[in-house]
View 1 (cartoon, helix red, strand yellow):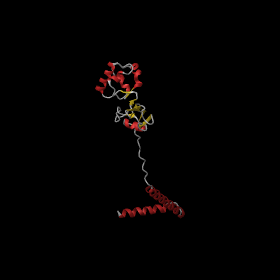
View 2 (spheres, one colour):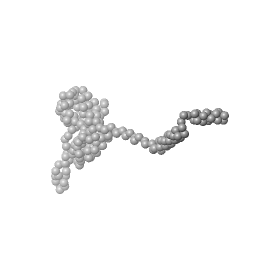
View 3 (cartoon, one colour):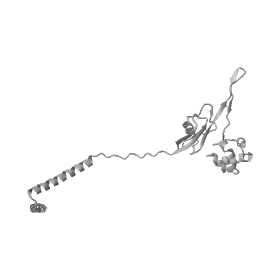
View 4 (tube, one colour):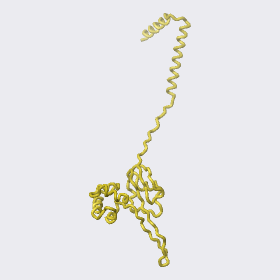
Length: 206
């Protein structure tokens, strides 16, 4: 191995001596080689010294749904809430229920769907009356859309175009299939077509 290296070094020396360059050219060539080596080392060192910048995390916005909150709330209107929000969340988005609001027939834990309306009933307070020396206030529930998931057969019968037969079918459908998710589902009940549904659509809610 030693003899091979010695022979290789001698050949390189002979090759260098045989070059048709003068002493000045040889020194210039050595200087160029040295400069290239220094630049290469500097570039490599600089590349290793640069900090690694991590890509910012990708933030995926949660899906939203639109809900119309009406009736006894502080700020009725259409609100955008996260998907899988519940009725109580929609009411909170509208500023919460007002005084004398009646939420007793609302399922506050129900998950809302995109495009639906949440209606909060109002209780109407009459002027105080004096009876037997005491002041008595009578509270009367304000009329409004009927909750089709809680309405009795009598309440459904009071709707335009709905008689006892259709009211009974609505109750039976509700028992067999569970609560209605939207008022449009009433059209799935036998005997309720598009024209009949249009007669009472504005008077019902879920």
